[in-house]
Amino acid sequence: MSTHRTLPLKPGIAWFKSSYSGAEGGECVEVAAVPEAVLVRDSKRATGPVLAVGAYAWSAFVEQAARG
Image (cartoon, rainbow, N blue to C red; front, side, top):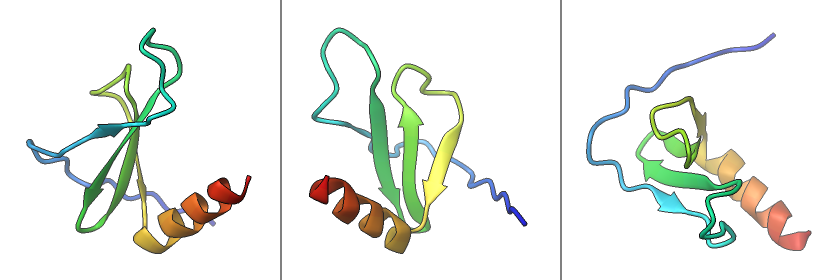
């Protein structure tokens, strides 16, 4: 079973580009924290799809990524 939920994106969301993203515009991601979730998008497609991840899942992902 899969579920899909769309969050309405409001103007003024503060997006932050990954510190691992290069200046040459390669593969880059941006994240933004909103009350409902952590949002993730491709920085080259600012109006493209946005992945919404729950705070607990995002925390677990970051923790695992830090471990390698």
